[in-house]
Length: 212
Image 1 (cartoon, rainbow, N blue to C red):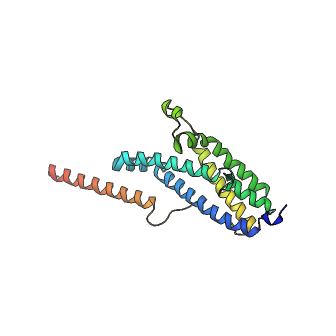
Image 2: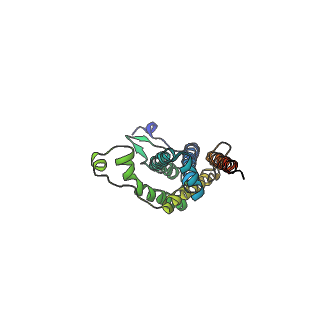
Image 3: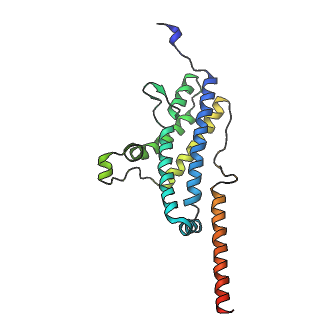
């Protein structure tokens, strides 16, 4: 056997690959937080979205849901496709094992992430990434899961990244909170202020019309 063809994963390889993987996880968390801020922040926010642009925000809900499913499946896809490594949980775990860095905690969080994948991968494969004729014509409902299962996925994603970060030497990084200037919270606040101003103008016109 030609030993020159054998590759060995170093801790540096695992660290560099993990940092790129974690950036994908941060983007996934940003998408989740955007969805949650828009559609899971209470009746007042839902009313704001409905009054301002009901059709648009309804379409956006579907877009965000499908995109989240795609991204969740992407990071939990198999370690390789057509012989080429994917930037996934399984690939990170292979590098960790080759570097003797795998831990029981990381293995457990991996299993939890793949549990969510099992719930939604059918929808990804047959309705989102592809249009399976039978699924579409029969109106099949795939990928159903609870809000709690979705929340558990993003929580386990944070735990997984922190556990791997500690193991490879980069340390943990809390990316649960992703808000910043110009984000969805600013949009919601702006829309609510516009609606308040519109309501105040209507009241003022009414008062003026009745001579109060």
